[in-house]
Each structure stands twice: as structure tokens, then as C-alpha cells.
Length: 265
Length: 127
Image 1 (cartoon, rainbow over the protein chains, first blue to last red):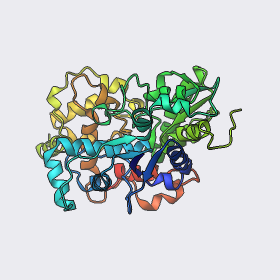
Image 2 (image 1 turned 120 degrees about the vertical axis):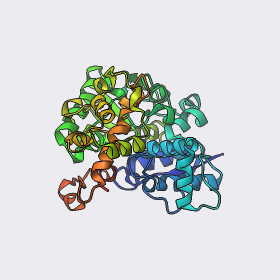
Image 3 (image 1 turned 90 degrees about the horizontal axis):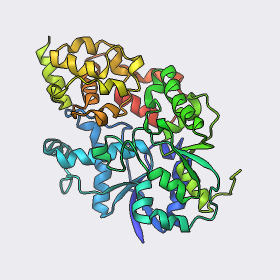
């Protein structure tokens, strides 16, 4: 039995409940136990790369340290949480000055210097469950469905910190799509930004970015597009003007595993 | 030329602007290129010259999406987004210079807007 410390993050408890609940039910069905740490805090949504920003990095370190104290690897589903936590973990393990400052603030029983292994849920499927094993447990395959994987920016970059996949030619979501019986669609914009938080600042720019992504997927014949990020889902659905359906990858996973009523129409 | 500000941006970003060979790949790959008055390669060059206040007063600092495309694709590992971040922080850390204020949030809300958008915008635009 594999047990992970599971960090849902703010949005998965509110606007992105589908991303969370299907992740939980699917993990259980795949023999993975997810344990949520007590009193977790919001990751902040974006990693601040500035070296003179310390306070904004502390909540991610608290989560990383909770996993360390539990003696378990940490898994996240939201792309933004994953990005913030992995970048924090990378920097604290490489940058002694940052580690010293963070630990001066936190005064933990034992200083945290990057000991926790961080997985994205997709990495857990690939590296712990295995896509071959996942395939064997699929009861409702997405036969004949052309599915476009949308990586966006946060899952892959900066690649030296995220270290999930090849940042320009990723395969992890396409391999996931194959495992659940679908046909992956490759398109130019799959690892370009949806506009992200610019939707708060400039709707026109968010609309321009997200419609580029959706049009690119549609031109390549996609029936649907999948993402791991609540903000990508929002931009692609609300700001693109496209009618291509957008889903969380966990929803398809749960459906493939027979945990959700099949609606493969 | 403002040496204090230049020093601050260099230290905060951790970027060695002298590594830039002016190939322009960062700006070529930037999804916000059309919206920016100064583009990523110009941030690097202008910080090298110490022309920081021009950048701090430009709306360009609020157009970066932090997508890290320029960071990953720079052949010299200059990491231009870190320079943009440091200049934006220098701007919003000034008293009364927050770019997003809490009072303006309610009118931006819609039923689907994820919390993630709000917290990220605050982290980027406000101190």
C-alpha cells in the first residue's frame, strides 16, 4: 500500500471540486492512500522567483515539512500548487542562503532543506502506479476519442525545478490518454500559456491566449481538451469563445475506472 | 542611471544580465509580446544600462504571465522573467503603489473564477 501526503490547495476545495474528488476516488481505486495534512495553507498561487522574497515562500515550506515529518512523499494535483511547491523545494535544496532565511523564520524542530519528494498526481500515475497497470484497471475506455492534452506552463517549467517531462516534447499526459483508451492529439499550443491570472488584469489578453490554445487543439481534430489546472480550465472555458469541451484529467480517469457514470457520448 | 535600483534588481533577481547575447529568443517566445511596451530582451538590456525607472513606470511589468517560457528557452540561461519580477517588485513595494487593491475584487468576480486567479494576481500585483 502506498501512502502519500496529499495537498489539495485552496481552489480544489471550492471552485475545482471535480479535480479533487475524482483524484481522491481514483487514487483509492488504484490502491493509493492520500493523507491530507492538518491546517494546510494556500500555496500563494505563484512562485516568486525574487531572492529577497522569503515570507511568500513559507506556506509551501510548511507543506513540504508536513510531508517530511509524516515520512511520506507529497502529491499535488493542481498545476499551480505543484509548480510553487516544486520550485520552493528545488530552491531550498540548492540555495543555502534562502534555506537559512526560511528556517530562521519557521524555527522547525529540524531545519527543512528540501528532503521531501514531490509528485504531481500524473507523475504518481506514471512512476508509482504505472500506466500499464492503470490500463489494466480501465473498465470504460475512451475508445475512438481524440483527446488533446493541455500542459500549459506550470506543469513543465522551469524544467530544471519541475523535472516532470521534456518541456518541449512532453509525453506524460499523452501516455495517460493512451492508458485510458483514448487517442492523444498533438497540437502546437499544448505547452504555451493560457493567459493565467491576466484574466484579472486584461480580459482581452486572456481571451487572445486561450482562444489560440483552443483553436490549435480543434484544428488538429480534438474532441476534447484536458488539463490539471483550475485557472487553465477557467480561461479555456470562459475566455476562449470556443465550444471544445474542457475537462480535468481526473474526471476522465474516474470515468475510465468506472467510478463515474459513463457518458462517453 | 540609478545604481541603487540597478543593484537592487540584480540582487533580487539573481540574474547575470551580462550573459545575454541579444538573440531575442525570449521576446520571440513571449506570449505577452504584443501587449508589452518593453519586451523581455529589453528588460535585460535596460537593467544592464541601469534604466530601471522607465521599466518600473511601464505597464509592461504587469503583462508578464510568469509562464517561464523565456526562462526555459534562453540559450544562455539568463532567465529574463526573473528580471521582470524583480522590477515589478521594486515598483509595487513603493508606498501606495499596489497595482491591485482588495476593494476592486468584488466587481471582478464571476461564479466560476477560481480562487487561484485571485491569490496569484495579488501575489503578482500587490505588496
